[in-house]
Length: 473
Image (tube, rainbow, N blue to C red; front, side):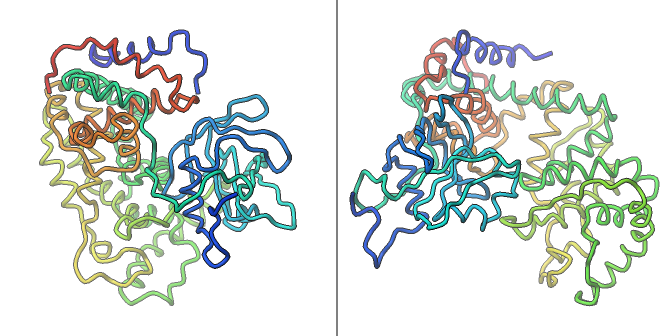
């Protein structure tokens, strides 16, 4: 059951979509001596310099309806795009490579992250025809850009997203109205998380649900799934039965002990691994006799050394080791004190992982936190507060006063869509945690549902219907 504040936002979104059916020859190439780089091609594409209408390599028309946002991390180059192809509007990602065969060279054909690609662009032709296929063998239409150039000049830097129509409305809207809408959107988002974790509690009990939630937050974006599956394969109750085997089973089940060459390790690591292996080899033999299950896939690229998945597994093991303290901190809800929870998580340490990034790294000169302040904040915002606020309403006011975490690409993108180039307004509504959550919810409910490049998104008109009381934050 949603709170009155969250219900207002839910009704706001539902009424916005009432009756809506659309849910969801130049010197550009440079001289022979100074060809454009792939980054410059991407910048030109995102700026719209190639236009929006193309013919695929098979001669079929394709129209770019929505350029989406420019992804500067792992995965396809442009996300949340929309194209019209064969009479249908397709939503997904767009990839731009130097040549068509780079799709195969870069491993996209086997990478499930590229499964939603709806268009493959390239700017160098090849004598051999190459077809772009996803991991599920879906054929992706291709467009050769080299003869589709319509502008001249030096490429200019492009923002990650483009301002939406709503930015003009919000720039003229009273600050109190924006605050009120953001509070409702943030509360709605928080209660969606509450409902999710309550379902896990109903299925597996409070302790296992919270343990699984902490594992998920430790995984962050790149390793959320394998950390969650690890907590599911090694339930908290099972780890508590044999505390002397806890750490070895965590690392063994994660797959980090398989195929490891002990001879290549330093003396400290050899000793640590020997301790783990002496326990794990017994369980490993038993697991090999059981029905095969998919191995966990970990992602270490583009991950800061201190956030390496091996350190995350060590952190989860230490959480299990200190579980009685976590339970006392969080139950009942009236017992929760944020600074005490932060102190508890920050106090977790490990004689090996305090000084090592991975099982193969050289020891660090100074000790490192096993779980940093940013991860603790993520635990609070995505798990602890959603679980406790419905039981202890005064925490909501505290939640609304909490400072925002560091900006990430999603919140920057959402702020650019909603506030455009009004830096002052964007700064005003990105300084608090609840504002970040509100931005993400509005972006999800409107920007991500739109396939018209903002032209028919109902949000700019719908916000005029928000008749809110004065803000209370």
